[in-house]
View: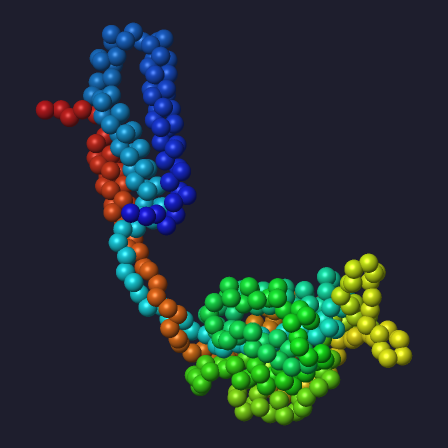
Length: 333
């Protein structure tokens, strides 16, 4: 026997208190009555009223309350192993890990804001298979399509510029690698969600867009950053202060959110572009994917426990009916 809502069983601790209160109330009632009427005359005045039936009625109501409380806690006995199925789409989340994502024009930084948006997306994409791609100068599949949200959450803290073997921002390769992560299943809708500052310096973006269109993949993008210039902080070195990226002439390099390529890829594939600083970016992107065709897939094995609350509810109902029939008066023969 197990209880799905075991916390409700704590209410049983109130049963002895209720019983004690009933005893105290009965004694107080008898004491108050004795002040006005001698106990020897109670029998003649009470007539057909039965004290035993009154006490039995209180006990029956208390037992009914106990059974109702146990039933509400959903007792379960016995189980069956079932194959679960889920309906959803395939989504590849591609996150920019280039050095420019370290900029702090969005608090606390572009990289951390991208991580927050991904976590929010994971909570909103129910039943969908999700893959994770990271990209800088080249793109890499970090996690194939999976229903395991925990695996993706575990990888997020590891995605920083230190894991990118090639510098730069290759948005085209990110799209190509994301499209390659889809499995052959024409019944499921496909989507790529880009989280980047849009500063694409490498690759053939037009060719990547055409490849996404051939794969029937809708591309949505969340722009991370602001359009004003922002310096790029470099990893701190021991004994030195904060340093920023500079060009060959020693001038500080500024990074800006470039929305033009992001809007272009979204418009070409029927997707949606949202700027992260506008708020609720992940919810708007998730909403934009709801009309994609959902396919059914096996979600694994699950255990279904047999509910037994009906037995306790029937016992409680039977006790309440019996209490109503019992009454407080003696039967006259």
